[in-house]
Length: 206
Length: 124
Image (cartoon, rainbow over all chains, first blue to last red; front, side):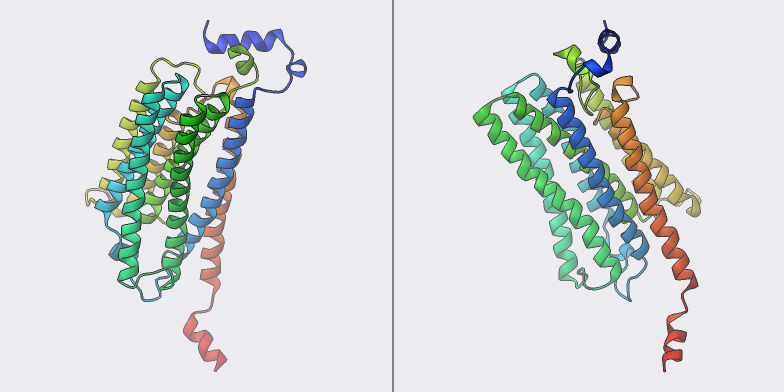
């Protein structure tokens, strides 16, 4: 019996009003999904600001002069690969396999950290040549949008370290695997935001 | 436990079918890689009519977001995912409103704005 048939059978057997509250995992996952969508709305506002201001360079350097596509491609590859290793990690969490959880999540951390270091090196290069956020409206919007994404990635990395410590100390208790599950959603959502960033900012659609 | 969860719907990313999910991540990786390379290629090639490039890049980005949603976040149209899909649809609606609304309004404002040099002349 497939999962869908089971679900249909269960929903026939018990009327909706008598089913009681949903399981914590469902509630937590749904609540976190709503948080992620509201986070994406924040990014939408920053994308809108960037799209409006991207031409206002005030005589300063333009995006075409500043961005290095090869650099961005490597950043994209890091983030995409970390998304997949994070997925493998959450499969390991589902089967309560401690060593492969550590392994995949460590690879996820390394890939995320290399993405972040590439971004920091790009930012510091731009600051060094005088293209900081105070140079023009375009650069203010750029640093706000890309910096907010970078901030999310660094928060995600801190969260990942905390979760690995919780796996080490608490093991795969339901709350720990629930949190790891939410971390996976967060990490995948950041990758989706990055698709928008590299398409709109670096490849220059507006 | 399993039937209890399914009777109440499913959280996004929840995977009851544990078989072959590693494969689904790899399929997702394959699609995403192809779409990413296509975007980078399209932005730097002369083969495509230049005015069509932004539209092509937009289509590729939306396709890749779809690939991520389906293969990484495991969003599907199954009946037990109705809540997730509804929330996602509302999110997309708000995002579209913010992004395209701001762009249209600011483009119109820009268009009806007096050029800066003439504004300075009046003020003198």
